[in-house]
Structure formats: structure tokens, C-alpha cells
Length: 190
Image 1 (tube, rainbow, N blue to C red):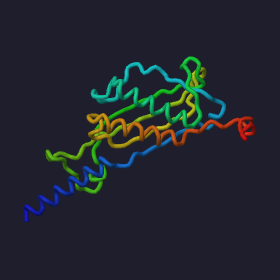
Image 2: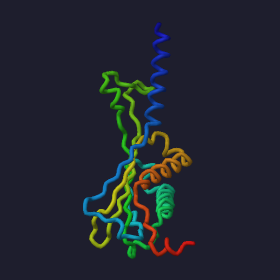
Image 3: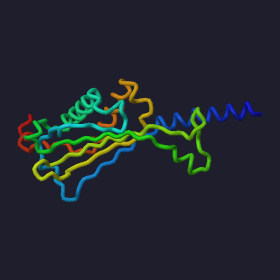
Image 4: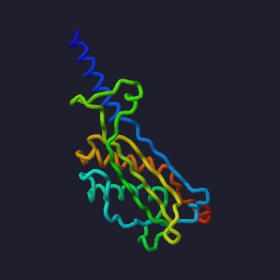
């Protein structure tokens, strides 16, 4: 009977870890009430400076930063936005990434705390990626988007991290407005 209980417990633990690791990414956006993003046409990057994510494996990781910026640039190009030097851009992009360890709260609320292989509560790495689009002259926020989800195992696997970054950026910027095609350009098409 103890062996069956141990097997059921192990299967439940593996399933729970799989659920947490594959937990859906939550994406949200925020646009201030008085924001009119249609009047802007170009974007640039704010200097990255000291980059603190909360995880020393990712802090100042130039591969991560380059991947993030190229993913954003691909999505912005698809939407018709032009890149410009930060000192000439209509909008400047600030990004923030954070990794924290979190406790599986679903199991705590149910009264049955899940345990990891060492017998402790199930803790996982949760990541947040935030993109702020700032009007540089007034330093006002024009648009914000962010994604949150599990990043367990991602930091130690470059291919998986690249995939997660691409997916997060694509989902965040899905709600970002595309550039309107000028009516003269539409009228001149055959």
C-alpha cells in the first residue's frame, strides 16, 4: 500500500511540475487615457545600463538583450513602425525583465502543499518581461505591455530562452497598434 501511495504521489508531483512549467503565459497591456499613439511613427531604444533581473545568470546577459531587441524590432517592422536613434525617435522603448522564485499557491490554497523532490514546497522560477513606450520629450508613458509566466529551466537552455523571448514579445506586441497606411498610398495602388 505504501508503494502505491508513493507512486501516486510521484505521478502527482511530476504532473504538477509539468503544469507549472507549462503554465500559460499571461499577457497584459496598459494605455493611459490621454494617450494617442497614432501620432507617433518611429521608435528607438533607451540605454540598457545596469540590467538587474533578480537572477545572476541573466543579469547583463548580452545574448538575452540582443534577442529581446531583435524580437521587438521584427514585430515593430511587421506593424509598419520605423526604427530611429533614441535621440531622434518619437517613442523610446524601456524594457524590464525580472525573475523571482514563487511558491505554487494553488496547492497551498487547497490545503495540500505540493512538494518538490527534496520534500520542500514546490517553488518555481517566474519571469516578467515588461515593455514601456515612452514619449522622450515629456517622459510620459504612451503604452505598456507585459508577459508573466514560468521560466523554470529556460535560463540554462539558450534555444528555449530564445523561443520564450520570441513568444513573449510577439504576444505582448500583438495588441500594439500597427501604423495606419496613409490614404494617398492606398489610392495610388493599382
